[in-house]
Image (cartoon, rainbow, N blue to C red; front, side, top):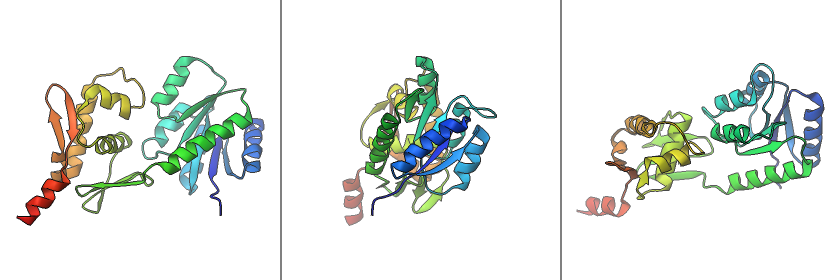
Length: 234
């Protein structure tokens, strides 16, 4: 049986919600709706199984960027920003905030569906569970376990440890980490990485030693399974 995805459509225009919703339903999606930013957060956190959010930027109460910022504190659910603006800076702001795609009004419903399907396919193909050296990362639940005990990580802390482990054994500059974890070119202070590394190490406890500091360069996640096995045999 084909998997049926649930899409949350957030737009303050009822006509736009109906247009998108009807097209999604005709393409075998389940649809939830919200008419403003505050309602969007209520619906998202009270509804199980939301696979993707179509999020308008200009809305009352809370705009799309504010909604996205709140959601990204504890969820990696794909978000497609929907706006009448076509300015490059607006698109950059959306991507920096954690958006997965950006669609400008007016748009072709068929193109929107194609982009949604591409994001969902990519999301489904991602490795969902990674485990190394007693650290387990559940990407679906956005949860980290240390020796099978759950540990609370903020969104950026989670993204950071996930990125370091994905690049296990590779020396990474602070700038490369910033660009990867913060989703776009980051114009702030590279010491942001140092601050987050310190927090991640503390939460990992003894396993924080796997994150090696490369002085004057950056960081590397280093765990050699073969060495651990040979030590046990001695």
